[in-house]
Amino acid sequence: MGSTVTEKILAAHSSRDKVSPGDFIMTKVDLCLANDITAPLAIEQFKKSGVREVFDKNRIALIPDHFTPNKDAKSANQCKILKDFAEQHSIRHYYDVGRAGIEHAFLPELGIIRPGELVVGADSHTCTYGALGAFSTGVGSTDVAGVFVNGKVWLKVPETIKFIYHGKLKKWVGGKDIILFTIGQIGVNGAVYKAMEFSGEIIKNLGMDDRFTICNMAIEAGGKSGIIEPDRITFDYIKKAQSRQSIADRQRLGAELKSDKDAVYCDIKEYDISNLEPQVALPHLPSNVRPVSELEEIKIDEVVIGSCTNGRINDLRIAARILNGKKVCPGLRLIVFPATPFIYQQALKEGLTEIFIQAGGVVCPPSCGPCLGGHMGVLASGERALSTTNRNFQGRMGHLDSEVYLSNPAVAAASAVTGRISHPGEII
Image 1 (cartoon, rainbow, N blue to C red):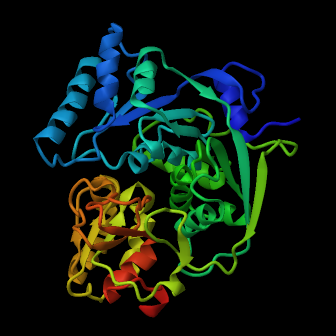
Image 2 (cartoon, rainbow, N blue to C red; image 1 turned 60 degrees about the horizontal axis):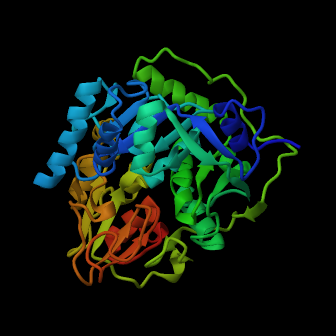
């Protein structure tokens, strides 16, 4: 009996020849991360342990991104805790404002996450790195403190659901639509503590930006992780990232990492999505999904384009293509968040930022910002937002009486022009 790609990674990191779903294992961690909300608690617990040195200063990443640039004195203090700890322990991967981006877009850009690695983070969307062929999952701040001490974390080996997508995507349909469709099919509890393995010819033909989006939202279905088998597209992305950072280490990049043909899955779901149109998640669950054509009379007050889900360069290119030469609907706020400084610079060079500003939008620095109702786009009572973020729970982006709809960047940009949820084909 063979193993899934997830089981192979977990076996390798627990010094076992093989693991099975349900096994409790102690695993070695290749990278541990935390942000300005979750790291201070981990740091506090680490100090209480009495251990003087972290397990490896090169395998910890501290990224202030949620309430940065600091929105108030409290958030400034949170960030200072990270800074002081990073200085004290010479943490290699600490990045402050101006150098840091939204963690789940920024860390892959550094080229430090590789196929076959095990990554844990004190943030639920750590599952994003499964797009690189890594096992990555969110854990609690106290678990991160434990990793700071000994570089290990205990896990229960998850069962795996295999998702196979057939067909050819329609215009304006991408990774966001695939994962929203999937969550709509299985529900927010459909993959609780399961590894979600995404495959099929559609996945193989997707670029990395779309793959990141899909794995990013595995947690919205309750998934322990999301993962895509690494291939040429994966390796090319990592090599380019390492080249930008002058990283010479190419460890693991040549290794084949695939699920065995006789691997056992708890479920296999196959979809032909050739006729899939852009999807929109209605309040107040990511599973409350409908095609955009059924929602075109819903008026909105704000459009947010960005986040760790859809703030990458291809997302901005799609939005700019639609907004070029057009104006934002009067009375509507368009807020754009490039996910990292590198993406921001690319957008400037390509003229995308100018397009957004000329259209009447505002371009903000890399930050989680409005995604969690933090700052730079919080909703008032009765307001509706259409957002390219990942969650639309009640009160997620502001007042409890506000509403959040989720979509891909093309639908978001088109809707910013019309003032209501709209198919991109209505604009172009």
